Image 1 (tube, helix red, strand yellow):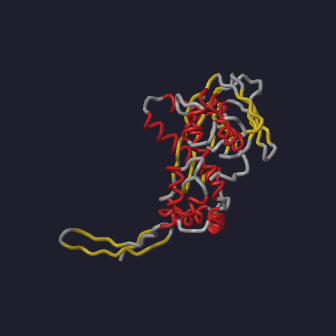
Image 2 (tube, one colour):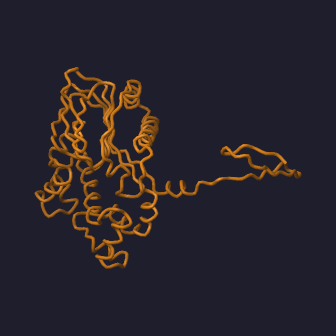
Image 3 (cartoon, one colour):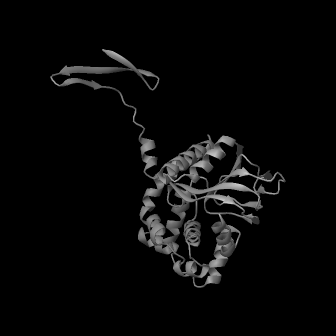
Length: 299
């Protein structure tokens, strides 16, 4: 009998020979929990740009996406500042540094036109509408001149498929570092989400300002109060907040569409008026949709 070292364990390998060759049988430690998680896992790159000459002054704002800003140049005056309002930390944005802002995290941001940076915006979901960085309590920053220059080179290339693979690989690697060893109850919520699959898929595909909790509950044959109670227990968020966040994602994406207006987006999402859409958007993001649209398109 032969032995091999597999996953730091010595295991037996059984073999026999027949007319067609040698058959081997060995122990396989199949990681089914990883395969289960991968079925729900999705990285969605929302925005990628090289930015020069952009100006932004937002004392209090958040976005429905994770933001990675990689600074390739500044004028040395220290006028561009990221303020983490949860921790009170103030970070002067310097060349050769990158800055990570989790989705829905409220920050203050001052960017002057002399700052040159790459902007990557993304969601990393295990199931629709639940980004793994929601509730992440702080921003991240690090100095890495080589990485900042490399990402700018990726975005400059004409090989868009190769650039996409490199960018997504980077986002996965950095996400693993930012998550660290913190206990995140993601796997349990991913498994629990299966029972709400029909409702979650409906919100993703057809949800708008008229979609109600009662509508989702009816899809699953549940009373609204029972549905809400179980939804919170299983997924850690109220169905009303889930619908609002899903709607905010759609609104942000539509506002970034070339030629879109605030009025057209409000109509497409079935808000009763442009005014109510603007009020909804400002309540969730901290800024009116006109300002979001102007700033985002500038990037």
